[in-house]
Length: 81
Image (tube, rainbow, N blue to C red; front, side, top):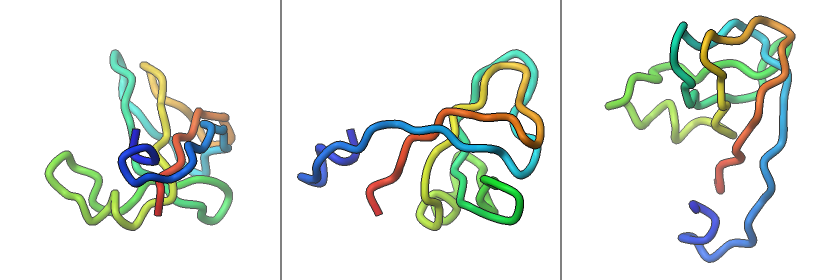
């Protein structure tokens, strides 16, 4: 959706290995992430009202209900910047 809005060629979702545990029980969460030591890591300031974390991220991780551990592979939605 973001690629289309920006007039860019759509990029396909990928996957990546987490460098830290993410998520919470009972709900799938979308977490802004960037490549870091040991894998993909959550952006600083990822609360819903904080856009700076999203702006500094490379992708959004789709973390399944129940969370994911270090070394788990999660779906990544690339960001257009």
